[in-house]
Image (cartoon, chains in turn brown, red):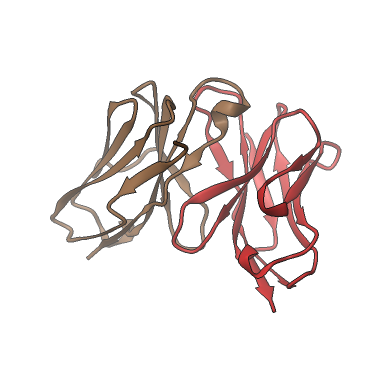
Length: 116
Length: 114
């Protein structure tokens, strides 16, 4: 299984809602990532988990809260978002060890988030 | 700090013509370089990667890229464009650190005319 899955595909939420994005992989990868992508722009790294521990937080606002319950799952909890947070949220995974193979990231299809 | 520059935010070719997408990198250590493709409303798919072995790297869908250290370049080519190649292409560089961070270029949108 060489796939990263993400649910839901689309999400519309109000600024007072609480929602969660889910990402799952069964490739035995030990590094997982959240990216935010605006239209016609490259992905922007938000968080990195390595061996289920948060290793990189790219100064993301606290209204985004990541969680890694186990080595296969990655969640992104959303609360009190702003309209400018509307974007495609991509999850990725990699082997998480030093070396080129570790840096090859496999991406999921993304969740299209709209904040009203 | 490492960085990637993709020359040309939009490239248009005719079906059957050569595809050339340009990528230049900046890195103080031997880089690991990647080309990803993104079709509309989809995630990123790895086309090919350079890992300091062969300088000419062959990828999926007939794409290849050549690593030129003297020019700090890693341009993506395909001899004959197909309509299905129309997509956004991203060049990225990574370091050797654990859980390494990918640094993306701004992307090049490829259009293929019939």
